[in-house]
Length: 426
Image (cartoon, rainbow, N blue to C red; front, side, top):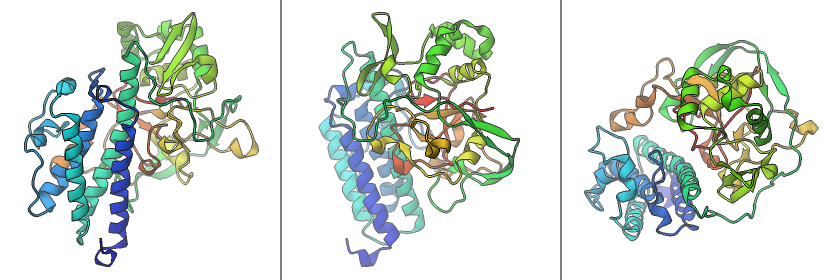
């Protein structure tokens, strides 16, 4: 590509596109074709489907509209790999995605190559802001699916009686297995604060517009709740004390027989936690953040601890200006790790980004003046603003380039298969 023909922004976007697509492919390296067909719960999707759907996004919303003479790889893919865009095409039943034995993996990989070549060709010409914005949106969409890819594989391997290991227990980042930081709180003055994205670079539509909120003085825990602390809640009868639970949460606990977070199981009378790096004894993870808890469990633990969950705006106000650093996907740990032990440097807020998404007490709603994107892309976020709770901060499988202080994740309050954890507030 002749760089003199396109802007530096466009050159950077082309490099970002290639990097994101390569990372998705690399996530498949430990998997067999059979692994990539598994859909172990209705919320999850097969790895093969993630490969196809992220490609579908670029073809459907960019190439089909903006590349003259573009040839569809397969016209049936326009509806077969649609996720939830009702205004775009018909949609196959989500819970049946594991039945898509055809097209085969080889064909899906050819589909990805076909679309990659076409996007790269598109990026060789000078493009308007609308097209560049769509490609950036597609890259962020794929990063979301990289996280979902790993989340779904964890569930698939947990449900396999052999409990396969996604990656062997070799670490590339600084993993702290010693005694973690004590649980203390940092005070914030509150007052009138601006929240939401300022619009200067990429953001999802649900992060805007920027607006003001009033916060009363509050405190946030400097780190996330650990597995050991959550085990104390369990030992104190936390799952059997109705007074700790919201009514809906108590019903979910009773109906599902919950007595521990997802992926915790008892082996020989001892608790073990299943991770992407295999099963670990609870003792090994006692100082690591607890994960895979629902909003209901997070809220009940907070009540038991004499605290509460922060609102999303308290969390964002505390995170404003903080460096984006932490145990994210780029660390390649693939599981939450303990906060740094107490030191003068660790007196600042820790684990704001990475390890586990943090449940907040805020319902997922549009900001004042919220406007979804035009057309079918308007279905990306806005139509889910009902019955969901907001999570903040990213997890150990969130790409570094994907997270920021204004990012709003959201899930139904009973959801546990995500890397979701707890930060306490007062």
